[in-house]
Image (tube, rainbow, N blue to C red; front, side, top):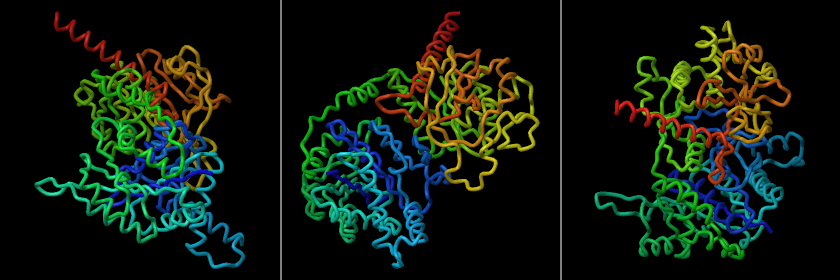
Length: 546
């Protein structure tokens, strides 16, 4: 029978439940168990697809085209999983499904209530993941913080779930904060006690308490938490702050014995955990001394989570090339022609990510022009790729007013335009070109060299596309169409002909990069940055001698 682990959080948000869930999944997978993970978000939106990045960070997209919470990205990066719509649950989805059942008459005239109808639907979603994945262990992260009113139905559902499948098949892990207070920097356990007390009011008794802390827990503190929270002392585990990389967390939790306690309490055999490859990857990351500076020129750089998958994919590319990636966040609205040299001084490569809306577009175009003319490795993703096309049309083809119809519906040269199937779309949620789509690469291109294959599949999230009538003229001036859809209707990758590494992709390769398997394009991009840095240093030495 499938075993279930439920992870809740207390005291405050952003403690790292997603990283804890991902790390536990990593440990259990490396112990030989088939695992699956799912996220339950208590917001009423059906999915985060219509949310601003400032509200909820990036929108992560799965192969099947589901727009999900960014934690699913962590789940995939830490494990071998490829997730689907079943792995992401929101209050909006649950209520929509229950209301549709009520409209069909499925409840036979009964009054529809939170208990049992909403909680039954939540439990059904958990069971579906287990049934379809045939996993040994399903890890369920409950979003939000204990005490939030919108999270109560989910907590009630998992309380009931333990009754349904048996205590021996379920485990509750609660993540809390141990704050350090006052001039004496004394760590305090009282917030953890209150958080667990709130959880117990709902009827949930945690089996393991993970304590987010800046330093190891003393024996006295463990004993205190154990006594007041009714948890075994050995099940009070420090979730220590990390110094270098989130990929250190599995090893930290393994040292605390988390996976061993979990398997024991679930009645499962302690498989021989083999973290050697994982620890080798982390060790390689930490040991790297060479640094490359990568500018990420985006619209949402104030919020780190807005480009979470991109930052992680860049780190993966660095690991693959034996270097550390130093990310320089450049807010494109502040990019001006007269300070381009100053802005990108010391930069070894530039990445222009995706986004929506006109704000900051001219700054992106200036950034791209600088990279193209100065032969700086350039990676354009989604809107970044579209801005590469606009910049090329304006400054190489001489089409001064070239633009995307997203920003100027009356533009004389609409080099980027709305896809045909999008013209009749009214609702914004879940209606873009989403999920995994195939593409055919052209031989002799940098992209083909990176992938080492003619056929690829990548995840998309966009409404606008390269306008096909401009293919020929752009190709004749040096903008190569490096990949197309199998039916030849859509442009998937563009490349500069006369450039060390200038690649734009319509899809989101960052969503398929993993800690143990860097995405081919990000690995190739960082390699180009290393070569650019090396050449720049050689040129500086020559100039110094002269």
